[in-house]
Length: 434
Image 1 (tube, one colour):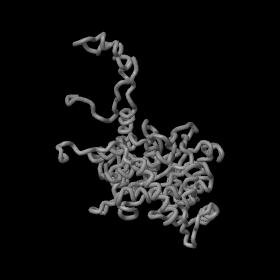
Image 2 (tube, one colour):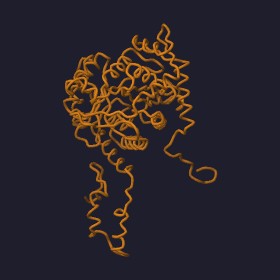
Image 3 (spheres, one colour):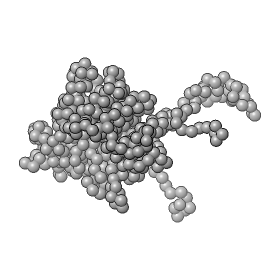
Image 4 (cartoon, helix red, strand yellow):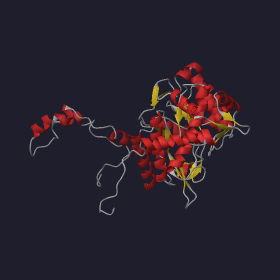
């Protein structure tokens, strides 16, 4: 309670006003123009120099504001991903929210034994099959890391396993640009040629810089392959507060915005108008435990702020949902999953990954994916709005029933019985005796 005895003020779901967004973008532009980014890819360096950037002998690139704004203007506000059969599946941008699994978890919570064990290629396939059958999972990532595979073949084997087990769109993770080119070739065969794949992309690509302010060769090579192939590039800085990014939320957002926008500039210089997704991580380094948390409330604030920045910049965004820092599928996991799913949907976050993550992103759980699917269904119903018209106002049936009557035998009740109530699939809505 505050001094007046009232409950403390709680802000609305808007975290940043116009002035705050402008201040964060201006700070990010200052980082790009005056501090710079190290880029270790010769072709990207050449593109930047030709566009008027200064790049020194160590690869430190200074990017002027006008080039960032030109890249924002050329990047599409909406990006469509198609399923394996070529049908439109997700239109990223605006306030449309889609959900899927994450990638490359080293450990799996075994569904049969409940034990934590090393992940395998079969876990990749099982997660993809589960995503394929869950109605509220919109896309798949590998979930598990195939520990038995040669590390240099792991991403290719995972991509092949996903294509064989789900028709839904994919977000691919590859070791380097060469692997991504091979993934592109696989997808082109499925789609019927590279031009058809460019017109109807089947997968997006997750790539990361190395915070703070570094863009290695392999990360940038993926950006360039994506631009040329027409595969949406999801460029995701994932620093940790107080370690590889400032500890303050606004400082973290400034660095993350600058890092992702640098990827956008290289991407749009390679091919203006190519599809790009503004990414961000939200890792919070707990200074008490030295643990990087997925579900710290400070991380949620970063997520919400970065989604708002993406909307303001009019570019699709990438975020998290369905994660938990708990080691088990327990009450904490349910709380984490429900909170983050509702927040991301409320914010209109576009491409939300990591359903099924437990244990600070180390362990995968098929049960958690199912729980997330249920939470998505519940929240889509909750946030779907209230239909108000002559039929739903029900004045006629209210007058017909009158004082003291009931609505069980009314045609109006029967007409709306299946549409006016949401039915859970795993939540318990039975009485104690049942």
